[in-house]
Image 1: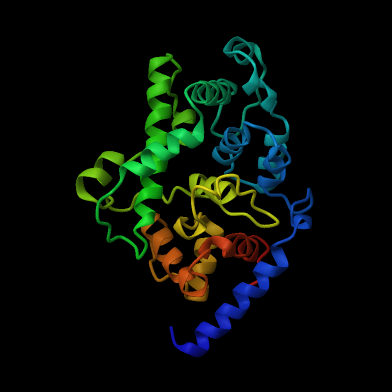
Image 2: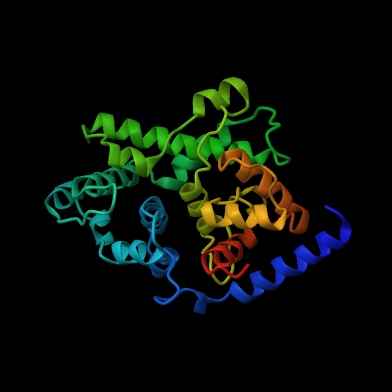
Amino acid sequence: MINKQRQKLQKLLDTHYTLRNTENELNQDNPDPLLVAKPYQQNPHFAEIALICALLSYGNAKMIVKLLQSLDFELLTRGIDRIQKANFPHYRFQTREDIQGLFMLIKILLESGGLFKCFMQGYECYTYKWDKSHNSHHAKILSGIYHCIDTLYLLAKTHKIPITQGLKFLLGSSHSSYLLKHHSLPHNVSCLKRWNMLLRWLIRKDRLDVGIWDSHLHPSSLILPLDTHTFRICRKLGILQRKSYDLSAALEATDTLALFNPNDPIAYDFALYRLGQNGIL
């Protein structure tokens, strides 16, 4: 990328970051799942509430927000029996039982030490060389995510919670064993958009993101939560050359964004998402 193009792109990214970095950006007319999660930021179980919100965040933004607003997150403070007796909505690929199963898993995760403890166990265990991106901490982030996915599947098996196709879709797939063995990734794996979006909420801190983990983890480690909107926009702006929508693309786009803001490359995520969502470019 030549200097003139880079300067022009830097100005565009910084302008739209400033434009979008306001709490007024989260509203019913311009919906985003963070609109539902953020009011719980003082809740001691915010990370777990945010996890549920993130994992259910696929499809139409208005429908996502409508679904999340219908959920009773206070159930996480009650016993498993209350969750088993509660009524849950269905959503696209998930039956009521799938969403109930998700709540039960997150409740059990809370009783096992919570999301932060689980993530850090995976994050800290990766100490090998890494060459899939310019940032060695990306492997640690992926190791943390995969460990959380592995743990949730193990908890489901231990507590006899059925792993349906709907629940599998929500949790995602782990490649932790491949990562540890090869210090790399298998070809064309999931970009983990919903998990990386969750970490953006939890680690970054500005007028949008909450940053309750910011004293333990640094925003420079984050991976872009690549979705179809940001993938298309990143390709159009020259941030991304890769043609496949996968984790390698997310890593490449993150490396490019780090040229503009090495300490916080994912600061531009929400602005890129809105550019794609609103069809501005």
